[in-house]
Image 1 (cartoon, rainbow, N blue to C red):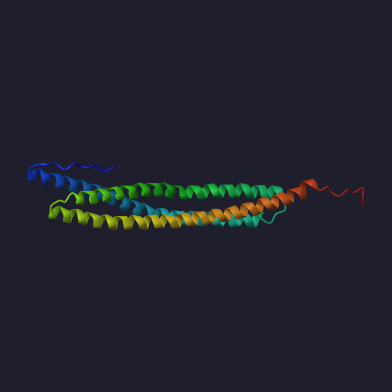
Image 2: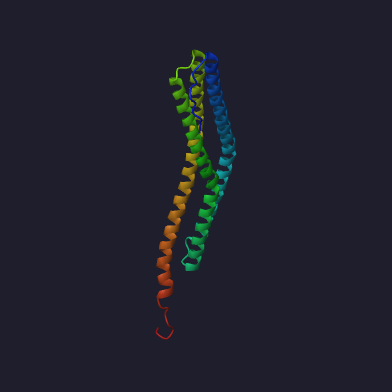
Length: 200
């Protein structure tokens, strides 16, 4: 949270010190935010590669499980398949967890940038000297660029979330069809009497 300044009254030297302090704090806050966004970008590229690799592996396992057990009529096989689907779902959640945490950090960074921008605009209303007005306006332009960079990171995370959600949706479909099949086959497997050799 940025500190709000109360503009001092008095000589020009104090006036100049006030605007120097304001400008320095904005620049420090901006540099901190810029380093955060840069760090997000560095981490995100490697994390995306690992996520896609991991998700492709889970997709392969899912297809193998459906091939091996999906066509079975044995309730034991179908129950084994359901447990496998649950494991895949947990694994997908583990893969996505770093991105969910990063999403929260991005929201905090976005809030921080909004606060910096709002404070700069408030300070501009205080009618600083032309030199400081130019510097503050330049800071606003830099903030606009930084917010655009942050938006690109948010967009990339959104695409990862879509991949995760799409895989989870396919798991849900496979799980539902397996449960339906299990319910039908269990009745046939356990409830229908076996033919007796005494009544042919």
